[in-house]
Length: 216
Image 1 (cartoon, rainbow, N blue to C red):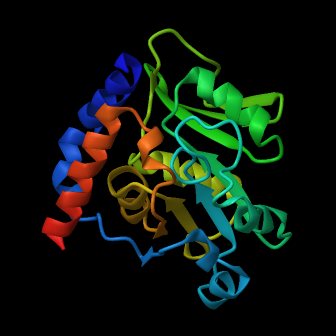
Image 2 (image 1 turned 180 degrees about the vertical axis):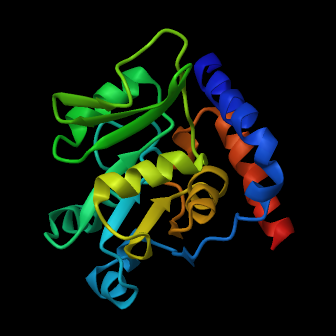
């Protein structure tokens, strides 16, 4: 529990200086009742050819080791579509990051870090890893959604124009606001098995949903 609380506190600290802008950007471009609605017809209608995926609550339950059975079929169809490109962007810790590389060996798993010399960008595909902007250095700090640099990095890796990219996630604060602030479209889906999240995160998720309704 303590690790999750610290992770969320880090997100809050990084977001605090921009909180006003974040709160004004909680409205998703698309809010779907089920991820199966995000089919080929939907993507073609809206010109979406690149997807940035959140993981916990979107592709899996909290720290799940495989695609949720509730969403596996439509997600597998999307990942198998040769006309789409995908990356995964999560605020997860190092252990989960390694696990995601094994779970999604063909999908780039992305992170970025603030270092004394600037931003270092990290990309893992299967067992291979590359760094842009320098190797790991002492004192580097993970950057967390909704930081727009993470979304821009994701767009570069996708190799698509911003107008053809969408971020898919279950959280208004990190996923939706991050995409909106970076100038790409956001697709919000209901969280998978919210009861699997630690109590601290469930409370914070309830708060962001109330904020979203209040601001609406």
